[in-house]
Image (cartoon, rainbow, N blue to C red; front, side):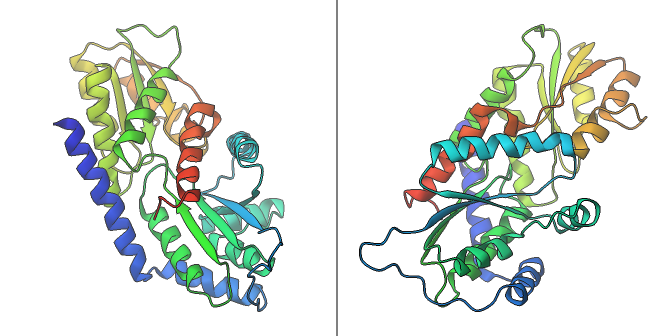
Length: 317
């Protein structure tokens, strides 16, 4: 029954995301498309002639991070994607306007938004582009990415074939698979009387239900494994109540985010009074932080790449 319920929830979330994208009413997307149209000049039709090799690319799209130490996550994805899809050129785009501006100001890095990256690929004559979301859930960022892809498909004389790969956990099979992989990421020295707590980002978007489904699966697999979110539900207070009920005195904190960036370092692992580590300690639970993003885990990256393969094969929206 639980499996059926979660399957229905995941299907509803993805279908709602796709329906939202079809309207293309996101002001963020419209702004990005306008910026891209000013930055890149006119491009013509890029249909290849008979006998020519089709130019194809995979556009990896992440939220982004300004934490230098977290760049290892992106480097790992690029390495594994390049190895698996050697006949595709690997490109990057970042959905966070704030991160792009910050890196441009502080480091002089000029990072592309998804719209800008797609405009460049069209201008360079690419005919097939797979846009692979590196988001964790199909939330607001994914909605905007879908809308961007929708608009790119409507460009006359642009990229002939564009497909989008789903985020990490957008269906039951992937969610169940990722829950198992996250549990395996806990330190081997963890005792069964100790907790493992995963920190997700959370959102006010309806896709936050996936975190609730994640906890439901954890309940069946490990009674002392919990997931909480920074900006949604479940909350840290929910976790503390369960830890006290189970008489937990020690917990391992692991980010359920692609990179161990600002949230992991500050909200989860810092010595500030309001960090998860400090709040747990104040409640009698010794917390050990593991600063490793999910994109540093090769097995989890494989899930994203499998989603990309599905999009390549034409079985994705």
